[in-house]
Image (cartoon, rainbow, N blue to C red):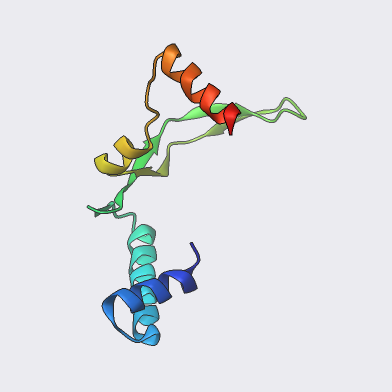
Length: 109
């Protein structure tokens, strides 16, 4: 979804002017960026968590020259979706019989 689409939907749902909604979204994004720059973990119940995780030290290799070099400990930003989203997007396991039934129905159409 694009920012303009989000602004229109929120403005329509809340009955606010698009300019006000756009300014609010811009400020939210700005505060989000500032928190990330300061290496703060962010938790939004409806969106999930953004956490900084320490990456392990390791020795890497340049595949072209085969030269090895050391990569020190670093921070990686990781996203953890909320439980509700994880459950919704998780693949549902079905039996072979159910799979064949679904496949047959899709072939008929």
